Length: 314
Image (cartoon, rainbow, N blue to C red; front, side, top):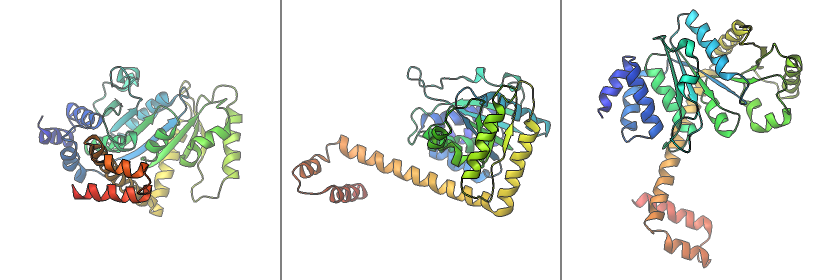
């Protein structure tokens, strides 16, 4: 595989090259550092929106509505749907063909389901690299949709500039939602399926929780949408734009992106150290150290220092 040709294709916006590059990210391919090295100088222009919430709240339908809104404003769009990895095929459990079919033939819309098979660091590292590919391909706006509200989804959502947390009427125990971490990451709350009974109660629950929380420079708005009735999408778009203007005017956008890339590099460094430690363990180089630990000749802190010294000596 000629990585240079893939880089050239991505920068030219060729869909096959973009798909190949994201597959390299999924697989943790050997050419991944060369790929990202070639693309990174051409990134930094796309705006990223994270879309997360419990399964069944209508995230994919909402993403499709946002794509329609973006295309109506002549923006080039990309949607990255981060799915769990299939234990049988290694691929995404939810395929592209299940998502947003009305936009599938639009040459200025790229839609991709992504699993994280083989990628060290999982979602936390794979998703930002895939977004980087889409950014370099010329996308104006990238939507990152996650499948649930667990820790992995929180990590992916924090890789976005603006994070939408989607709930539905009867969304359940607010305490559990708070424990899952979604309240802390939300820049905009969306009560989807607002044409159903209980939408008003869901809005009130969120507004009460926001009032009970700390005072912030940006208070997340709580909006109602209905993808079935095509209602509330313009208000949601305006909220995303308002948050973007807030981030840009306060300098928070640059601070967020700076913090994000530093966390990503830290994660990469940590994964490399783990890989080196695993290699030492596989070679049996730590057996003596394990014996010393079991015999209480060294303590765990000293053992950690010895392990670091041995990795540095490689």
